[in-house]
Image 1 (spheres, rainbow, N blue to C red):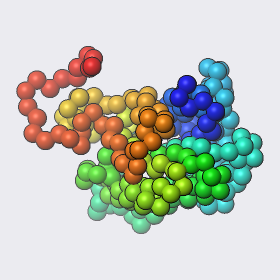
Image 2: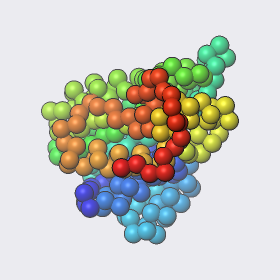
Image 3: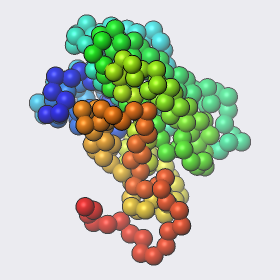
Image 4: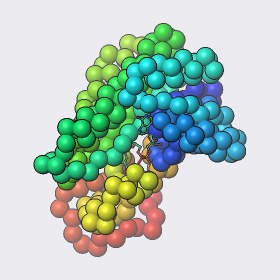
Length: 263
Ligand SMILES: NC(=O)c1ccc[n+]([C@@H]2O[C@H](COP(=O)([O-])OP(=O)(O)OC[C@H]3O[C@@H](n4cnc5c(N)ncnc54)[C@H](O)[C@@H]3O)[C@@H](O)[C@H]2O)c1
């Protein structure tokens, strides 16, 4: 119970990585606020958490809309009393070749994945500064923000921007006792990946990732628990890649198969 008594807001928590992080933080004693553009999904996710003994409530938000985010923060802080942890996770996928990216696609991707993340982070950080007892902010970036993958022009640019924003936030929020870090997932088995990754993409990931498999949302949840815990108090402005070695890998040869277990 490393997060007992903490109030954690998770955007995009109705499913996928956000829901897995909500579950992992809740299992450590945090009270969970799930906020999602899919209001029904957020409520259903909160019900699922309560069924396993986690205190949780669902909220509606569109992270790209500053008014909607302000309303969310008012609801969360008035109902739950305070805010200790933000998991800035809401996002949309993107897989369009550079020459085919329309301005509409570009603007929408940046509006949700970068501007939306900024709006939420700033609104939450203001609350944490006012409260005066520090906090933890984790931005969910992506390996697509670090490597130039096919089709990741708009998506990768947004995530690269989020990584840089995290560093500036870390610098400016350190005096307030707020830790700001990124988790950069590699290829993770979620509904987003199910729609965005075709067979060729999957084969390419399995070739490029030393662990020869996709990650699970639960593996991102475990990393989030660490960064939200007191054990990570001196980790600041860092990007924790959770990617099966995708970023680290260079030339790979020899027996390339997924291990049955690792220790
Ligand atoms: N799945 C992967 O392989 C992968 C890899 C790297 C990074 N990521 C990042 O992880 C995060 C979660 O991804 P996922 O795979 O769980 O995706 P997902 O599509 O399964 O879930 C995303 C959630 O965000 C919500 N959402 C979308 N737009 C929103 C908005 N404007 N306001 C509020 N909520 C909104 C959706 O309703 C959904 O519940 C995203 O930021 C994504 O870019 C995912």
